[in-house]
Image (cartoon, rainbow, N blue to C red; front, side, top):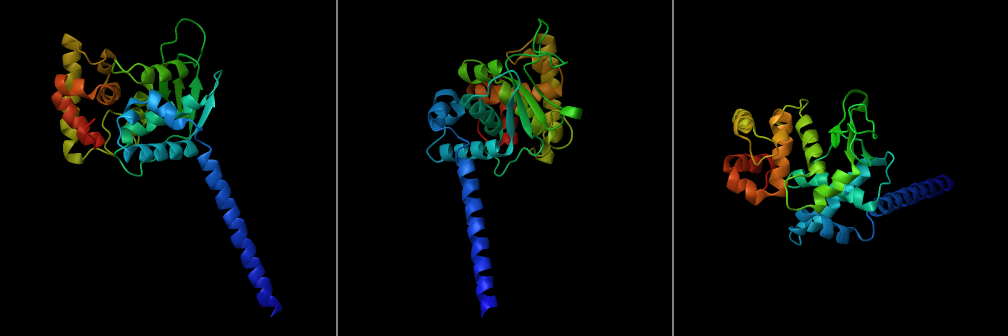
Length: 257
């Protein structure tokens, strides 16, 4: 009888410890979001503002999951609650219509105060880089600068958003190759069509210029990121000016923009 009681007590302790750990994990997950997170999202994130009453809680939960999985570290910059929410928003916006998406190729985001160069220097005049997806020793790391991060959400009158741009690179990279073709989310039957559309658009941009940011004419990788910014920041304008590109991006992101 004593053995049975000992077993029952042991089982009770295991259950008690499990519930305690589970409760701690829930508390940890909840406090990842600041108390005023809904207010900040409503003030700064246009995509969130435009969601219905069913979509907003889903967006909030996706942000919570992202922040629980990815570390955000300031490098000579203070990481404020707003920065965390904007980085997470830039991650979720492109994949919001894709259930259960996880950035398995990202472990940490480094937040710099401003632009930097290829040697990661944050001082001096030659600092052309606003954000980047790491490789080699920086694999699974993203760098983004605080000023451009915030400008991308504060300025709603252009087609630029650095956070979205960099997370689109990660989406592109998820299939193992950064080539402007996100084969992990684009149906195979559209792959060649998308490649041809990118090549044609880049050629037109180089020859005649474009309302599309000319940085997109650098190569297909940058074109995909730039046109994705345009798609999420100014969807109606993209639909008017470039309906074929708009329709293909609807297929890629499973959304109407």
